[in-house]
Length: 108
Image (cartoon, rainbow, N blue to C red; front, side, top):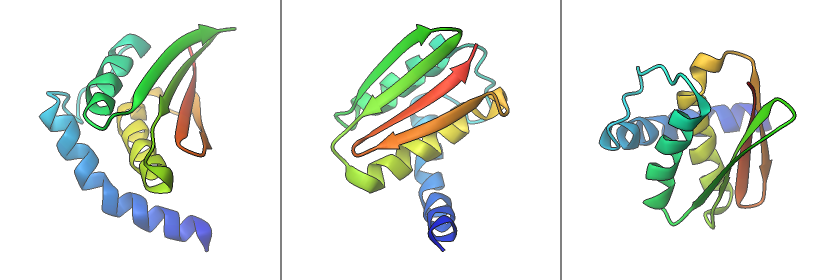
C-alpha cells in the first residue's frame, strides 16, 4: 500500500519536476553524460529551494546528496528529480533517503 501511494505521489509531482528542469535549461530528454553535469543541474534546482547539494567520490562511486528542510514531500520531489536526471544510468545507481535528505549513489 505504501509503495502504491508513493508511486501516485511521484506521478503527481513529476510534471513540476519536468517544468523545473525545463526552466533550468536542462531538457528532460538530455542525456547526462557524467556526474558533474548532473550535479550542476541539481545545484541549479536545489538553490531555488534553499536546499544544499554535495557531490563526492569514494571507492568507485559518486554520491550526490541533497539536504533540505521540506520533509517527506521534499524527498518525493527530489526522488522524482533524481529519477529524471539519472534515467540514463540504468540500474547502476540507487537512492537512500533520510529525514530531510536524499542521496543517489552511482557506480562510475
